[in-house]
Image (tube, rainbow, N blue to C red; front, side, top):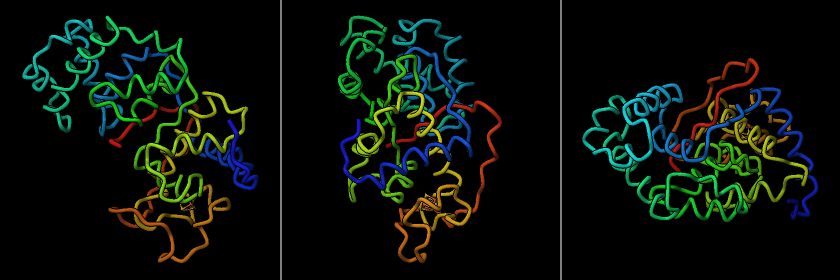
Length: 261
Ligand code: SF4
């Protein structure tokens, strides 16, 4: 996995991963099959995990198999998705996604992805309607496929860019690959999932869009931005000065929340 010759940066990655786990805990290990995870992520995009889960379970009770959900009308689903953002769009997207999967694979089963490489599986998923690079990576990492894939959304891109873990100006879709190219060859799916989870928590709690809270950040000693004056820290659109602190993790924690990429 290692291709970079920047040994300082490479050697910092395991330390960063270690600190993130110590600070935020480990990612929850998922046993959901890939299709269930993909539909859940489509439904829960932009929502708190608890809200997404509640609506997902309600949807599964109403439509107990994928065929029934594939045939569901957008009007019915819109009514079911009360409280979700973009509920009409999601109500149209989910049956459309299932129909596309059936057309492409002959059924409602993504287990065949376990037999192809991570890159090939991601490319297959990305061809589906509404499935971004970030979402495809998240399905690979946080389902029973259990692949060493790093989903990067706009939030987790902030610490990746500020920590210097990618090339300057690299597109969002390249960030996960660029980080993993710098990672030790020993990084497996579990370590990558924990790192992904830690980055999400870091982005939410410390590394905000405007001036990040470098003073309290657990990675401040490893980050080139930490000692810079405010005006020289890489800024991102939106947000205010970051002062929120996530609660310390208490053992295994909840899973990854994917935002629009
Ligand atoms: S030190 Fe500051 S810029 Fe660097 S990762 Fe932490 S919060 Fe972000």
